[in-house]
Image (cartoon, rainbow, N blue to C red):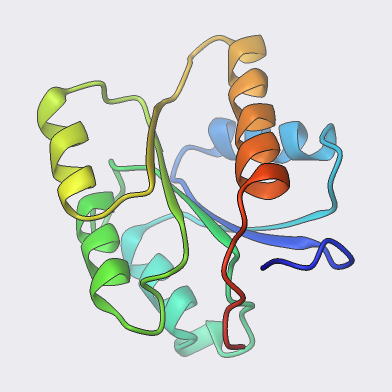
Length: 148
């Protein structure tokens, strides 16, 4: 279980600077201390999670927010890698994407995504979604303690 006495570590895998900024602002408005790390493509995401290259000191996230449409390696491939890796597979992955295509929803759940959320384009609705993620995933759900 995540100890509430320390900040919650979240990895945001998102290539849109505007969405990164909105997510950062939404978590600042939240009720919990959150360390939000950001990577902007699929290759960086895997390097971060496996602590390779410039990410040797990276913190293992308690939760991952994953966009599907990423450069270099798309989110579906990143999700597949995460869920196939025994060291990473228990980290909850929330797919947060603009796609509402049924094939994307089915594929990500087949790859063991923990949640699929259609990213709202409206500023206030986006904030609401991030607050609901915080409320459920960081305040209600019990997350596994990762080996660090």
